Length: 148
Image (cartoon, rainbow, N blue to C red; front, side, top):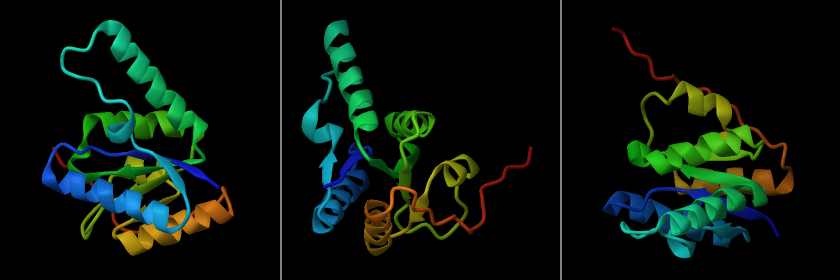
């Protein structure tokens, strides 16, 4: 059985719904997952020792997993860190961008193995990576660009 780290915010209704959908999709394809929301959450007044324990627990869970599913909704800062850390650690990433119809971020599109815009696509990509950890489906859409 494969293990997945879920990088996702849960701080508003849409993020929380996405997180639950991701967890259900992973379970449906027979994949275990680690979700920080369900494991180790820091309270606002957490001591430095507690903060360090939670930080280490999360980064260890990323590197101990076979791959990461990263929810891009609302560009949560912790999720962005987790994606960068996973990439730097050589852990494959599947980005989940529910309803994406426009441009996708260049750095994410190049660092991920696949981009899913709905739960069905996510399940397909997860099945692909479970069957072959070298699985990759290159993002072929437009990327974000900015003019100054």
